[in-house]
Amino acid sequence: MVLMAVIFSLAGSLALAGSAPYLEARAGDDLVRVQPGAAESATIGSYAVRWYRHSVDDFTAGTVAVRDGELAALWLVDLDRDGGREVLVWLRSGGSGSYGRVDRYHLDSGSLVRDDLPAPDPVLLEQYMGHDTFTVEDGVLLRSFPLYRPTDSNAAPTGGTRTLVFEPGASAWSLSTGNSQ
Image (cartoon, rainbow, N blue to C red; front, side, top):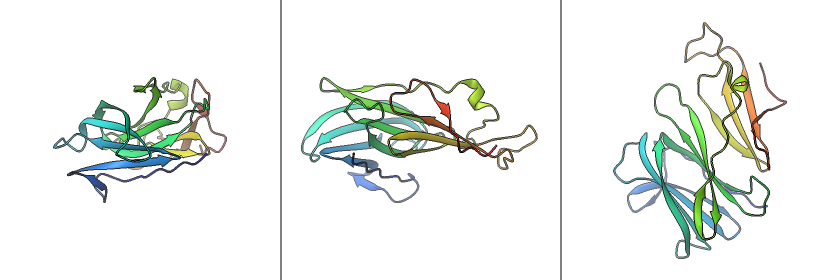
């Protein structure tokens, strides 16, 4: 399986479609672009997901979604191992918490459909205060974040790092075996 992700910060250098920045991912004949709404705040508004075959001249499906945060990364991967690729969009909230979420989309009968990932079990989020980092490795979605002790400030966590795993076909997040706690 071929996977290509393009990761940018909206404050950095982005590709431009017209005048608005966008993220782009390619895998096989599929091309996906994700773009914040024109003239919207960097941290709140909407974003468009556009799926193409071969090139931007061959539009397949698209949707617009609410955005509470900046677009941080985009992946095109078969996360559920059903033979079809999904779009994963990482959004990072504004403010000091940098809380993250991943929106997942798939093609269904010519339409792009959002398919929410489950929330992690609250036990897995003990000592959590944001600052998420999401990555995709070998078709597995990973979510890492620092752990905070009760006396830690938001800027100085001392509890190590926790990594959660959302594996292909999974219905829940699990704890990675490589955590430093």
